[in-house]
Length: 172
Image 1 (spheres, rainbow, N blue to C red):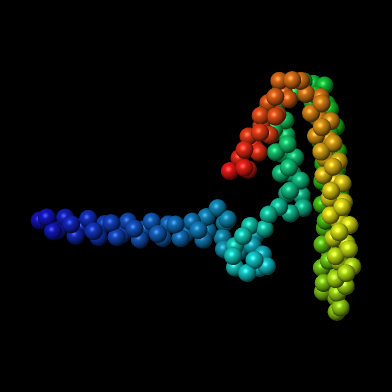
Image 2 (cartoon, rainbow, N blue to C red):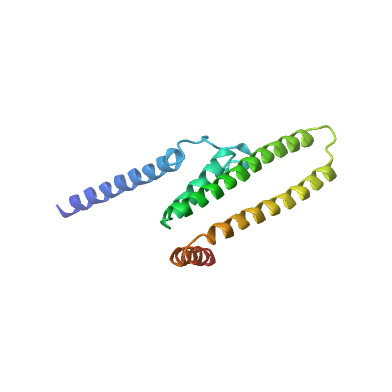
């Protein structure tokens, strides 16, 4: 009798293990990503890395996250107006940046697919783009400081604590 229970226990364990492994395989194949080839680009050579944000998705995500963080500060009406103005300027920067990026990628695509690509021209274009991105970041930092100066001391403290938490999170 005892050996019969052991057999059932072992067989049940093996079946459970097979079911778990099959379940994990199915989740890996069709789980959160939704399928093998969904949103996958072949340039990753089968590694399956997520390609990141593209075009409007990125700017929408940044603005959503910004709105979420600002909402936590409980702004006054005057501060909300100032934030709205700053947010629209950031949105404009992002929209222009995405359009410029798209144009640049099209130019690179055309150049690299030409019969004799001019790598010197492409390198110079990237150097110029790096300088533009630096200016873009400076403008957005100025907007952040402009927004920060509209906050009261309590809101500033909350914002600084959030920044410290993020820095500590990235340190580890």
